[in-house]
Length: 327
Figure 1 (cartoon, rainbow, N blue to C red):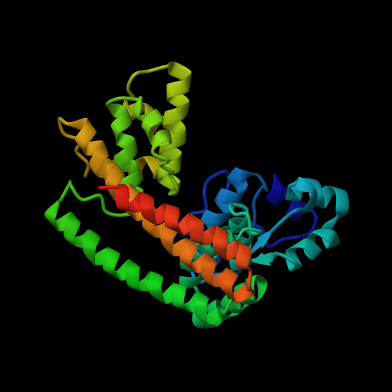
Figure 2: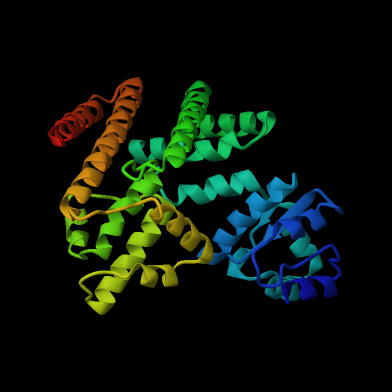
């Protein structure tokens, strides 16, 4: 209906994916006619998710992508009928570049008045920045550096470090696949799924997760946890059937979860399995926290905030003590 209403209003260069996710074939067809594309989706969580997926698909076709935000929570159909063609075209002309849109959406996950969250936000931007060409990357590195009063060099160092880690991780995971080593937990996502998989034996581990302060931070881990938690609370079950989890996931998440679970074996001793998972998680988690706190202390030192330095130093000592106790 949106595309039809816009066409009737005199805006001819419109197309709709007709209720499905934007596909590579559709993008290839669009880019035969233009490299400049404006995507418009609903402003709810589903619409934002669809926009983010659309950006990735369109950019893989080398399109210049912008994201249109229809003000007032309206869709294009409502807006153009109420305000007319010219007002809608003003929105099109002010549509945000895709990278700017992605970085702004990511901010919603962080408390940017907190130094640790600023560090986490910048780090979460690194995978986005890595995908950009040299000129666009330079532009957004400068913007982030200016916005948060940090050096461009620091952001570029994070990008370089992440590329180095990714290269090492790729080689490691490649060796693991060749050796089919089911005792190795691999990356963060696989580790989180490995921990959650024990719920198929005993849902009481859900309480153990809370006691051990385990956080599920990857998208798939968080989705697995939320679905499992919901099923347990609704049905008061003693163990989870993994097929019940699959039914609650979208096809992409289901495929990703099945792929990871094909590499995992709990074995007869579930407590030893969980302990091994937990030790791996704790060492990794505390290690990340130590680095975050060290970086936050460096920022506080730069600002000359002695009270903040003292507070962070105490947190750092506490985390280091906890890490030493995990064996």
